[in-house]
Amino acid sequence: MKKAVITGCADGIGFSIAQELINNGYEVYGFDIKNQRESQKMSFYLLDINDDAKLFDFVSHLPNIDLLVNNAARQIEKPFKENTLDEIDAVLNTNLNALIKLTNLMLNKLNEDSVIINIGSIHSELPRLNKLTYDVSKAGLDMFTKGLALELSPKTRVIGLNIGATMTPMNESFKNESIMTHAKSKVPMKHIFLPQEIAQVVSQLLAPAFKYMTGAIIVYDGGRSLM
Image (cartoon, rainbow, N blue to C red; front, side, top):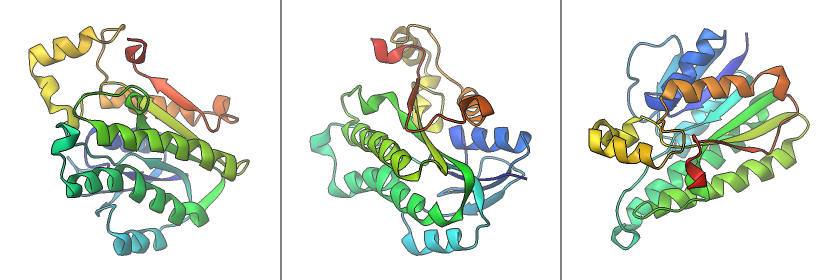
């Protein structure tokens, strides 16, 4: 049985990826800063990715794995000049620094032909107002994906999946009809993704047809980055 580790899997995209993998026969180990949304057939840990000591302990007790999905993220929505230093740290540490540390710790746990998938954002290249620190963190994640792919080939593939607007707890405002309508107006395909749809893409990237794909930043956004 193949084994996977997923960060930020209490709900949203991480939760859906975990369910998709379990349905495909994976044994899943996941963690989040909050309790999971509902009962899952996985080994779930309540863990802050920014807690170095607990992160080290978590990894040390893992078996060898075939897949690491770096999904945990947080976002501050307000003008950059209003961000406190603690808020900047919280975003950059969760979205990039802690993710890099976890990946470093996981390297000795990776089986041959393993895969690392970093869940990124189209806003690594498409800046917005009021979300600068988040967007900067995702730009850094793109380079981490490319550089790590170069270093780990041919044993391990590393892929970035940069997604567009998705219905997650981070995007609760989409539940407002007028906000949803406005969001769809900026997407050529007029579609806001469900977490399950992103999970299906992750599953596809693990297929034999993509066995030579590494260092790629896959954009899956309904054409949002074209506008």
